[in-house]
Length: 134
Image (cartoon, rainbow, N blue to C red; front, side, top):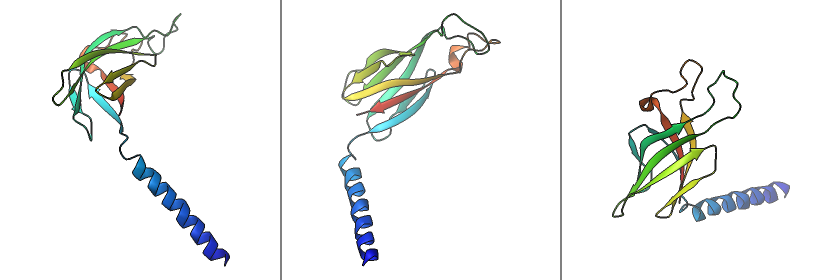
């Protein structure tokens, strides 16, 4: 009898997880990496993001002791099918988000980090990682 009850409990638990996954299937949550000057279409959407410009990078180089950590700022362009495009400036550190046509776009990472040997890497060496949610 215990095995039957345990089997029923496991089945109900799995069924509730499966239903929760079906209910949240409409929610999109992607992470995309974009090289400088390149574009990417976000999987499962008609949204294209372009890494247009490295606006500034004043982050403290690795291996150097700085008074402040500094920040990095990039410009991205968002374009969705049949919509006008928009340009956004995103910074790290920070929790700034770009809101475009129902998409929430957040800058998560900017690479490479400045180093003592190369405090300002060439812009074309950069890439960004963005979180995209709908």
